[in-house]
Length: 171
Image 1: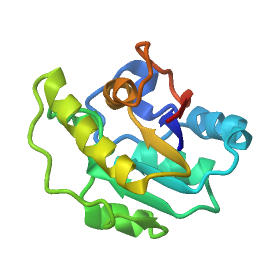
Image 2: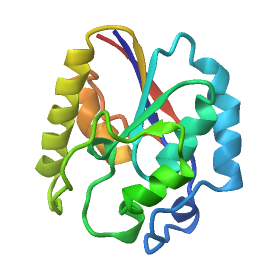
Image 3: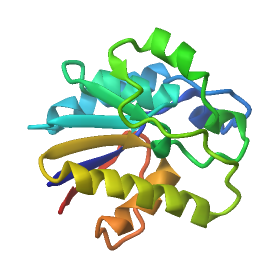
Image 4: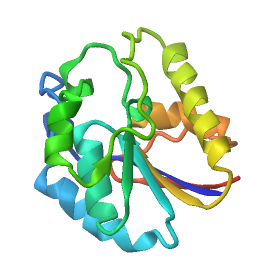
């Protein structure tokens, strides 16, 4: 199995570190970042992303011809900060009708207060990956979630990715 861990492209809250913006969208630069790297992903069989707007926009721009699945498991830490919150799924489904929000749906996430909370979600998502078993999968998520998931997948360094950067991991 090959996995691409992709951090979402630049969103409004990344520009001035304004974390009070609720579920921020991509900036024009963020869309350009996606277009610059879109050709780097060959043979993608499945795309799974966070349910946050910026991740949905990143996945939709990188993989316009692929079926996209979204799950709350890939959200950034649920600390209550507005930028790490997402719109109601009914609204997300209206704006992203091409995305399947139900295949990997989980119950509402509890408030997360420490690194271990995100680590527990990473292990839940790793279990899903093991069930998928093979293929080439693109995962579009957030900096800290990727930092939790990458070591579980065997990545040996701290992958503090910038916007629209990615890791390729072979399992």
